[in-house]
Image (tube, rainbow over all chains, first blue to last red):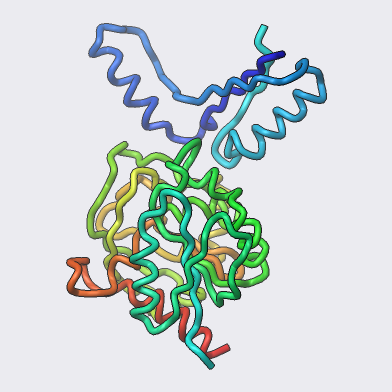
Length: 81
Length: 227
């Protein structure tokens, strides 16, 4: 079994009001020096078999089709060690 | 010719299907219930995708609904010219299904906004706006947390140039949408999506801001008479 991680983030040009709200809260809690926060989603996809090239191609297709809306989001696929 | 048949889709989590069906009947058409799990449009003349929280808004608003069995029928039918109106969650589903460009994201102010909202009808030539006048100001309820319309600059420019921005917010933008966009249409004008709720503004009794929502339903009925 292998675990593949898909990170989905709003594209840089898309406003992220949730991330902004988090960034505004941090100084109030005493955390200084934070320039920006962006919020995203992490998917952990457990595969039946190994994370070979064919399986990764499938996961990328999943990300493209369902996990991310590529109109507003970017995604990154990686195998967890 | 019998009464026009307008399908009203129900997904798990849809809220406004009963109001939509009532608005359809109020306008003199037959409201035909369509179930998300059926691959069957039941021969309807038009489809209303109502608001709510289909599939609990899991993943993204409309992201799961877009793959419902009914949508497998609805998407090609809409591409072939079937009139489809999506309000609120229905608009989100139309964008996720790529029947309309762009996407609807979290309101700029992060608040869920529920209020009477003035909008301007920018395009009175779509299947769903023929009974309005271009430039007409109407008031409808809005109620959403994720209604901020966004698209890449090229898409926005094309929408504006082609008159496909159908509705624009007046007197304050509730969600921070680009260019105050409240609703858009596809190229053919048969598919229209907007965040405000015409189905909640068809009867004085129910405390809506008025009856400006009736125009959507009378527009689609007149279209069938004229076909």
